[in-house]
Image (tube, rainbow, N blue to C red; front, side):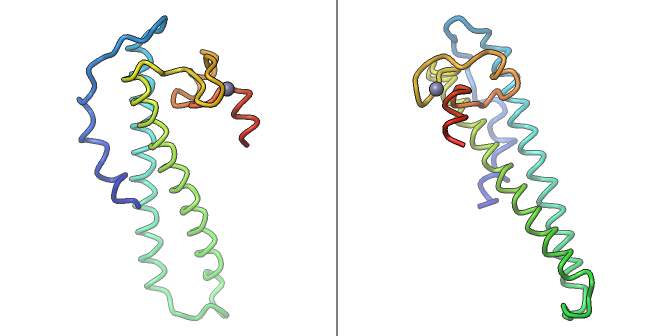
Length: 139
Ligand SMILES: [Zn+2]
């Protein structure tokens, strides 16, 4: 699952011819999305390193969970990292999906109700696929 994410970042840097977005500042949107995607990719890389480090610590520590106070700590740290990793993968996928919508001229339109997503929301969450109302309903 991490393999996909790891091969992504450098390959897609220059893949986008700039589409015209109706009524929008396409290059600003694209820059924001690119940044969002880069951040998610960086986050994934950092997480992979943290998980690798944690795995090393785990393997180095004696297999003695009952008397090892680090045991539970390590596994809760691990599940925390896993949770963050899943979120980062989703963030990356959201950014990719938003790029696709941008290419197709459907960026900034709610996938659920078809109404425009508020510009303020897109500034905060450039990869947002749902308007505020639909996102609230979905969560
Ligand atoms: Zn909606």
